Length: 372
Image (cartoon, rainbow, N blue to C red):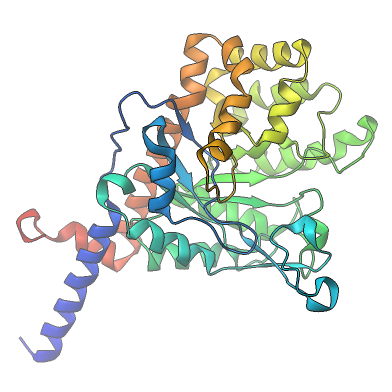
């Protein structure tokens, strides 16, 4: 064998071993007695700061079985001419624009890879650092999967229409009818990536009579991608985007449609919790819907870069009145089983795609067990 050939073989084996080290076990063994899986968690904030993944796992301890792991795709600009020495850390603290920060995906991958295998098994990293209005968004996702095989399970949370955020994005926000979004969803479906999408059910302060056109755009997007697993974040609600008239009926329109059985909903964010627990009526309507469609809902905290247990677990505890209204079967599925089903399938499909399309992943699969 030539020296060049030996060097190439060494490089391939090194890449394979790195992939194996990053992959971790295919299935996670959750802490005994854990209370929930977290389908919606941000490790970093709007200036890409937050705890390390190791610090976060220590904070959540054995109460959390498994969790997604993603950053914020947008960076808040610090414009000195606007805020002076005050450094904004949140999008509502400045008028300066937001811009897409693609390096966040490398940050998340590095955090994940720094963990021992048993701890990696509890996490499902997600790719977020792309502009959904860019036809190259799908190429960014492919590139991240190629550079970090064995790491990611899905894409998101990313936003199309989001109160206060969309108008601030440099270059303009995304659209539900943009071919770039279709290209992204097609690729996610091909690979098996779980998608977490934030899209408000209606624009802020819109009258109920004008909800339908907006909702129709969203459901048309869902209908175009029946092979893509999509989680609609916060059931379409936000800080000022409150439940519309007949909100549960809008959700049931999706839930009852066999062609949209790939669409799921996360119960996440303290803002959504406020709407659900606001009254006996809202609790009854929500619990009734979930009890009739228990396979289609997941729980997520949507906490951003927490440093204290109270900050993190407070959201879960806000939903306690809802948990009490669910049947035991529905509660188990929302808090644990649905996450395991969706994200385990996502892991398996993405790893299979990597073995077929990423040389390092294919080489790792070919290395005999006794040589690893």
